[in-house]
Image (cartoon, rainbow over all chains, first blue to last red; front, side, top):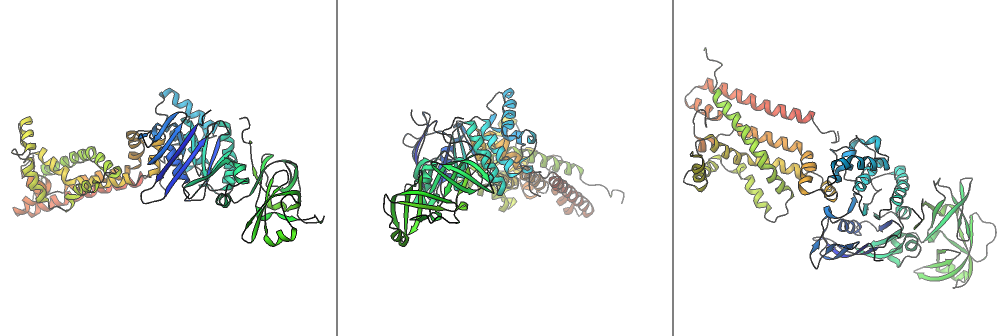
Length: 369
Length: 230
């Protein structure tokens, strides 16, 4: 089956940066695609081009057989005629309209008798029923985010675009909304593209991800692929976390959780997660390698691992290990020599419990919705 | 003096009528012009802005002179008006209305355009991406959010028309009941050395102008939209 979304375009801002994108969205490979990259990398531009708010000078965008943009034949479907909803970074709620009026704004094409039930349905879905008469200025950040999502969903878009959906929130609201948002997006089953520069967000929300840097897409794949095996150094630097492995919580106690990841048991701090399915994230510099475990150590995790690859990086060596899952360690060249590391050698990887960062995953990629 | 209360009431009523009509025409005509100025990306937009602003700097006599010639029965416009209505524009209330609309144009259009331009662009994009046409976006988003600026423009146009003098004198002359506005009546009284009546009429005009502005700004303050930060 052909991909749902196929896009390849170049957008040049007048006297500004140039943004190139090449994207495809298969369906149904999991509903959420992350467009990840540092700020200024062109993520929002790509999203605006997909929404139809920008018109790239070169390239094409096709969605389920329809051409939205073809620079060569000058075809262009403007934003108002694309079956797409965009959730803006600051939500862009209409300040003079109530929550219900905001949500109903995009429904003017429906017969009047259908608008009210549709609005009520979406408000109910996002638990906004009691707030329907309020103005956006009377809402908290998290509530505004839900209204923006409700307004976008009310039109039943075929594709949902979210621009930094959590960046306007802070602290606990952000954490909470992240989990909620993932649950919504998976339940709805509407394909969504989420722009973010936050790797926790990418991990918590995404099934697939594309990494954008310097106005170009560098890598595209499942979230754990991209985090686990960055295509190049640029991507590795962007994502910042070398090891991401799916794990299941099997025990809790003393503020710690015990996880099963592949054949290994891991111990990590208990962040009070709502679900037992998690992603365990590890930075390469937090992994220590030992030749032979001395037995006693304050670190909780000792993993038997086989060296798969060694890549020198200046004074350091990046060591890719296989311990049932792929684990990356960063050690000094000196240590590497002393330990006599070579491909195929077996070593012990030591990781302290606080170095394992857990991210909740309410549903695994590709799991039934 | 037994006529201490006498003012030129006819002239005052005429001025109020002229100001009301001018404001109505300017709201209808000025909103689309302002919308175009605020949202168009045309390269020659600055020229249109300059034309709209011209009455701000042009001496009223110059504007009045061109209008007198341009509206006269020998001009195409004046000729057409005469052919259709059988009357001529100069020295009539209708001619005065045309002149007032042009003279007060920047006082209405500039606040309108400023209010439109101040509406957050992302709201316009949100409306567009929710499938709204330009017209729907304008009426449902831009207009309600620009209400304070629209009221301010309308009041300024009204007050400015109430006080105009030079253009009226050039185009309208001084016909009681048709073109003799309150400012001309005051000038007349001064010419006739009737300082007492000129003073009374002036005071009344001052009071009316202040009342209009005071009430409007007072209402604006009270009707301050609840969504604005306090």
